[in-house]
Image 1 (cartoon, helix red, strand yellow):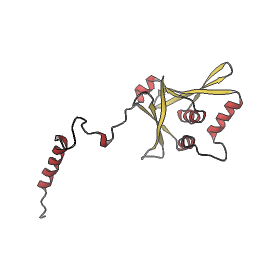
Image 2 (cartoon, rainbow, N blue to C red):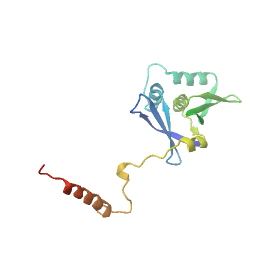
Image 3 (cartoon, rainbow, N blue to C red):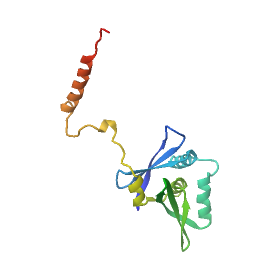
Image 4 (spheres, rainbow, N blue to C red):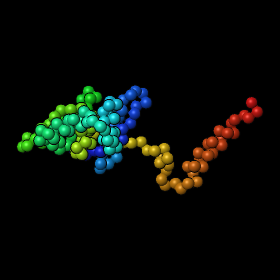
Length: 169
């Protein structure tokens, strides 16, 4: 099992879907999971400590579990099958340990409310995990000092391009 934290919630430019990015706490790998806008909003509300007049659905679920004497111990993103992620709530209810099937978005929303760890199965991370792309500003050769060959080559290429332009046209 790999412990992850919520790195960000992103909006797809192609649809109204959101992507929650989970980041391995011991590394750079991230796990993108598509979620709906309402679930994304629920997660964001809790992460931003926004006060609401009435409980949301995930607050209700937390309250019911607590009123029944249960305690969520963690959530586990357990499987990826046919491009669908599966998760489970791990709940301690007296001497019973319950594993309750759920959508990852609901599990994550509950996890931020009860402040429990989020885990991902290693096989899921291997199959769907990604390494973040380097920022364009970080893609310079670390061994070169500013003004050395890399920048000069880029500048030379630009000068060559300018030389090909005919400004009289």
